[in-house]
Image (cartoon, rainbow, N blue to C red; front, side, top):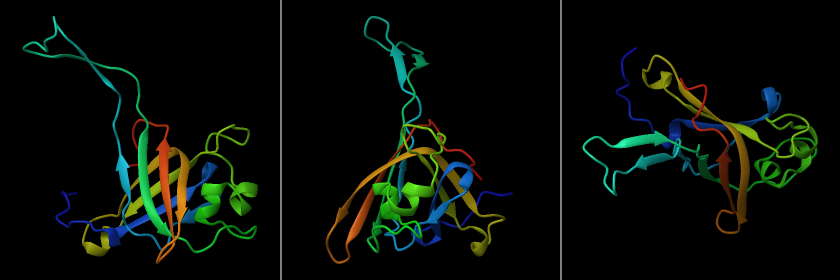
Length: 166
């Protein structure tokens, strides 16, 4: 398959949260299209020779660093026992609080989810759609009033790299 010649735009993306085993999912709708994912990888230690890098630097991997992500969606609902909302993911309430299971397991102290990012490709002539999964996400954020009201989501993923990359 050749490298795609189609530049992707925010209109091609779709974000989906899922719990353990993807038994429950929530496709994020009515969002700004400003998803941003930072993938720092492991820390790098530069071993200096009397304060200098040297002709060939001596580099070693050190501690893993968490990935982080952000996006903005439009506030539409807060919580309901009958269906999941983005706000429930943030507040761990309603349907999410009662029936979703952490990707760390049912008895995990910390509630995490997986975040999938699907990028449409086939509609534009690519051989396939493109996707990646950001695993073990702790979701935080803020609610804001305006025209429209917003929910700003911040994610810390306790993995070094995304998984399920296609």
